[in-house]
Image 1 (spheres, chains in turn purple, orange):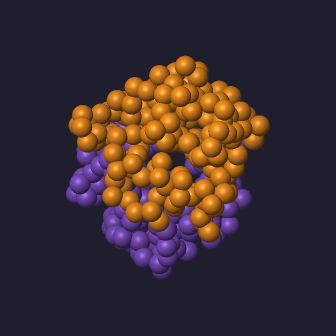
Image 2 (tube, rainbow over the protein chains, first blue to last red):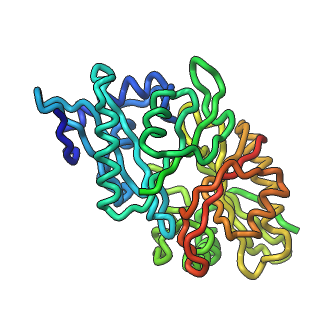
Length: 169
Length: 169
């Protein structure tokens, strides 16, 4: 069973252990593949200043052993008159794959976004080759609004597209 | 005649005088319409720390009187394996409209983006009702990749879409 809660500073080492291999692989996020831990923290975690005030970070905890097996970011995709649309990002521990953590975490975050008053959710850069993510988002009601051709240089596949995906909440 | 150069800290008051009415109107950018000058500066200008290192800010100067009549931002739209696609934003002084400042500034920024090694340019949020911008970008070779429905709450028109636009450089 999974439990979801707001991330605390003490969760950072566990989050970094999930985030670092994703960053190094460079296959699913537009992050510097050589990022150090401080840069990773700025990417994912609320910083001391200048952080988007809408940012919430959630962790998924395996109730069996208390381990953090996934994490998500939720924030406004834009400001001002665009701030009613949420954006979210998700990470699941490599050794927790295939157990439905991503799907459960996504369901929780969609619910949290709805409760926070967002009326839709948008993903800005879903890598076209990321079939697992695409299948998950499609099954959760997201549709592809458009695809920016060649916008991602996949380290294995080469130039590929980035999908913009969207669903009403 | 216009001259284009990198923005300097001394240009900030002129840039704010262009940016503030655009922010207050809330019709074309996803900015807090009540933003103060400090927030405006963080939005447009390189800050002391934490600023995207790819950010360049350009001003268009009217050579007749030395006045700043427009400004543009150029930076990587994403990081890591998406950093070859540029993003840019443009502002033209209200009393300098209709003189081709936006078109000339855009031409300069497209050239600068190409010279900096970007292979494409993407706009993430062109307000669907902003016919002037749409006509300009279309005439400069941008196409609409997709439109996020209802993603912008136009203060006059109500909910409208945000276009993602793109062109190869």
